Length: 139
Image (tube, rainbow, N blue to C red; front, side):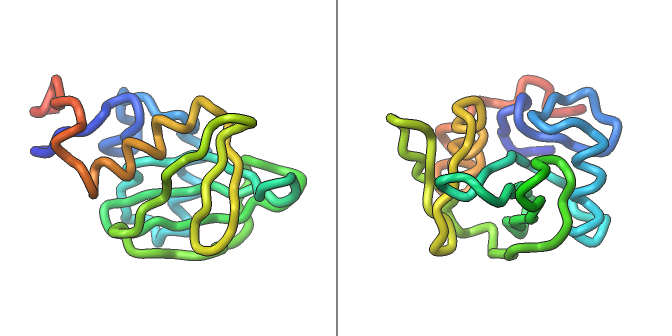
């Protein structure tokens, strides 16, 4: 992995010891909607603003895929809501009365803990010099 990346929010491969906000079984379910071979760089759950449907944003090297989980679950993707080129910005995230952002014409809310994930995903494409250096580039 020659590029700098925030290890707390990326995964290099299945079974990696690198931490990610979403657990391994959920990443595997997400991968089923990505065609199986794509490496997940970032992933985070979101809700449609004001409540309602749940979503999982899954970021790979080439795509941002938004998976719908429905109103009753945040962890069981059921369909692809949309797929967009990686060169599209997810944020900025508005903070204040809660973390929210607009993406593809829709408004989403996220838990505060996922704001750094969104910022890192955007920085990787739009401002890579701002990311911390990978402390273990040979792993």
